[in-house]
Length: 178
Image 1 (tube, one colour):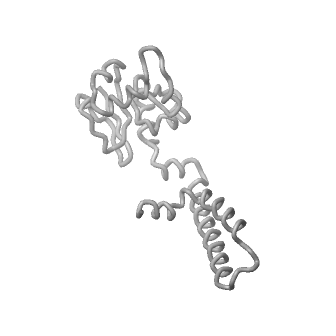
Image 2: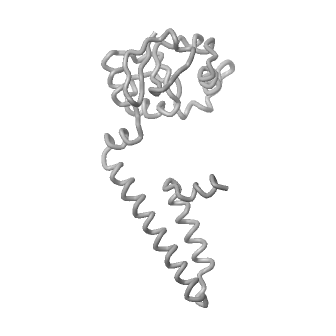
Image 3: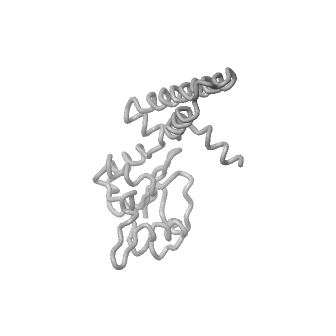
């Protein structure tokens, strides 16, 4: 029950809550309500508008520039700059959540996986399945792809990458090379 209730304080779902609130208010707001019921609806409306305002203001300030947004979302910009400067652009294993960003901002880096690749399948290869196997420390799969470098989160630990050397690290990410 607690987890269910905690979801309602999350600002991530503010648009869903707003749509739900509009439905409830329009369905149950009759003019023959008592003063207490009307005050509750007015309070709920004001609270919803206030939370929407807070969420929009926070989101707007974080989205005012691409540089601020990627820092806020913790994308590995500095690590990617390091990869480009050191020409580590081929056979790079990457964190799944960063693949799309890398393809978008650094197309010269050949990523292992991004969000579009989850459904890619050939006769012999299911890339998402292979990614999961590597994350579960099935090192044979890693060797199959001849991975030469890795762009992973700074707290990443995996037995398959023990022979890799850390050449760059910051609070968000680290770069490993063979």
